[in-house]
Length: 456
Image 1 (cartoon, rainbow, N blue to C red):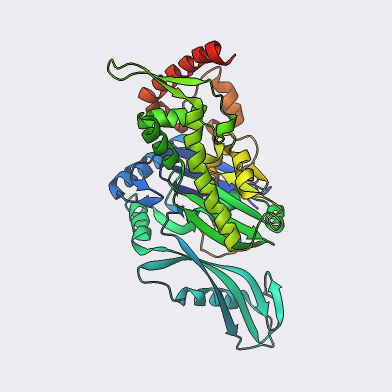
Image 2: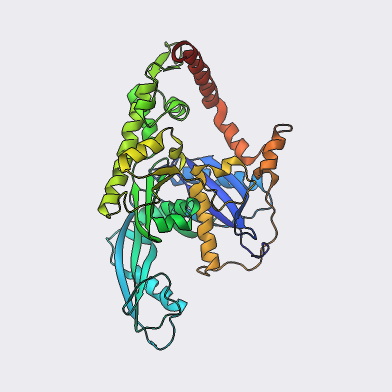
């Protein structure tokens, strides 16, 4: 692929805890080169749904500004946007079409028409179809065809996975994007975007479940024999764990988040029984001691609930540990919890691993971009490339040359130890420091003191 002709595609992940904007383009080896990266804290989104449009617009502006700061050569007008939320539903349908000219080979436009016909499927009032995904095709009596183009036959049909969402929730996302002076190129279900970023063809064939643990929701996508079999949005995520810690231990939200990240474990049995975290008292109040084991018990209870949902969904569709040889891939920000793999394997009976979006990423990018929390955003770019390569959508033919900025390469990370270069990511991190960093450093120092006294 000639780089100067390939489009630059921007993924916009509007999440409960963060909004990320990543611009990328495939290189001549078919790998994604990241041309711009920005993120911002999100405050107008709850459980994956945009509730406060004005706050969401501010966060989108901030993420885009940081993205453009990382590479001033970028011009961002169109974005692929991820969608989640507990309003998302899916249904299975079957559609057939009698061909006008059965003597000729099946053409691509006929398949497009067959897929488009499914958009007339009856769905409950107030809902809207987000995507129609063909699972497997059949031509006359020939079943399980992946691509029927080129076949001959009287009748062509397929089984479809149709994803729907609440009309108002979809309208709020589109409004927030429109009022940010952007155009939504397409809305993509977040678990499908995450799956495309962390999954290989081998995973699809073997059978695999992808669990994207976000801030407000945990998104599930199940693939079997190369086909998308099931999608679900579980209405719990990392924010719920943080709130459980806040309520259960009587601490501030920032303290709960810091404890979860620094000392949290998804398995209470793995937590040291004699280890304690000292929380500084507020305004002259005495310091509070928190048991690391109690912290782990709270995290394990909520994570077990999320994984019970996953196990339930897999049983519903008849795909258990014997069918999914690829196991379960954990991704999203919440996947970085300690001992989560062990808990997942115990509850689901499936082999588990963390899914990093390295499968399709060009080498030499900074470590920040390889974190599971950016899997959705990178998957959105891949979705755009799939549209471009299959001519599903119109893209401009020529694009001016934009280089990968040094700020997003490993070389820049090395040089920063000598002469720091402030990237868009650093700007965003610096905004977050204030109370958070002071508290975190106090927490680590205090915990080290406790460790010296108690644990060793």
